Image (tube, rainbow, N blue to C red):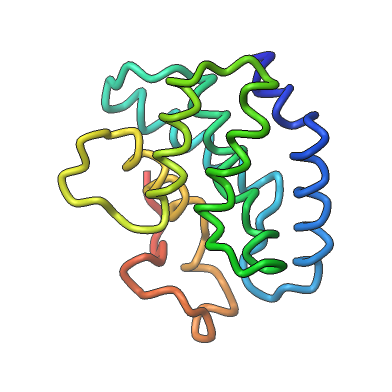
Length: 160
């Protein structure tokens, strides 16, 4: 998964990621740490395996790394983070050896990861949506009552 590590090492990814970590260091709600990004990747991969979906592990991990990197642009520029993240794919992914088709698949998932897509034509979108929500341990969070997530998005029990 050399290309995935290239994403992590990419100067633009590192700049955005460092800025996001600094911005969220005192955030009382879920943070968008490397652990979150890798949890999402692992949950996506498990879900894909359990469903027998023919999706590459590398594409899954690349998508998970990129899915919230646009959050800093949402904070600083008011751009919805899914759009900012998709835009960053155009900057980062070609430098890391991803084809246009791969980049488009990743961008599509990122653009759709905030809402469940009923009858999604591409199950890859749904993989990211579910993994992103299941990665959060809302059931054990002391801030649950103050959280602005709708209850149907919250992960209110341990799922396996």
